[in-house]
Image 1 (cartoon, rainbow, N blue to C red):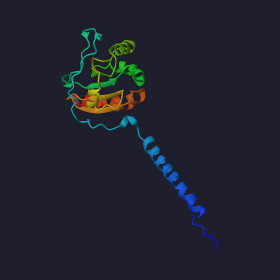
Image 2 (image 1 turned 135 degrees about the vertical axis):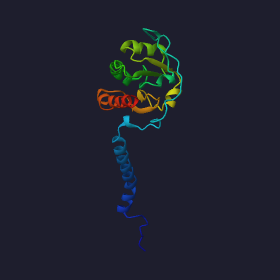
Image 3 (image 1 turned 135 degrees about the horizontal axis):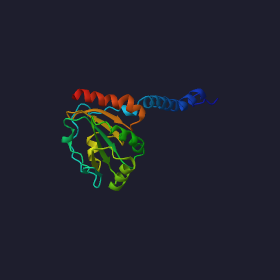
Image 4 (image 1 turned 180 degrees about the horizontal axis):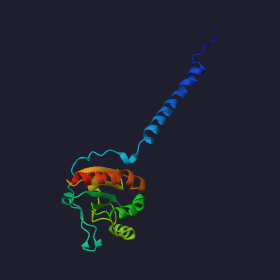
Length: 197
């Protein structure tokens, strides 16, 4: 009697071994193209078109301006003015890169610049602003990060344009750069200013 082989033919067995690898590679390519094709600064925000969060934040103690202590964040300050709200921290490397651009933006008195200092040590935050100059008319301290959650912040830095009626009209995820300042942020500010006049 001759022995019959009960195993699968070698070609079929090889195909079955390679099939999971092919499936994995296919999924990897799909994820690569989906993740690589998007602009992370264009993450949609559920808060666009809604009132800015009504969160009061204390001032950064010891941060002085010509008129004395720089005030904290009061939601009432958004009414009647276009505001640029920047969420930043001294430990955030991209925040250092965008600081000179914020200083330039602060020269435009058509809108107010508001800072939310995110999970930072007060001494470090004051040193940061001392190094680059304080562009903010108000700086609220978000020591535990709760206010930033209410603003829908994914990470620092993030910047919001708030219209004169106190509604969030635009959100920029990531640092302000010369390119996105010119192409996106300034046009959004202009649009908010025109809508408010």
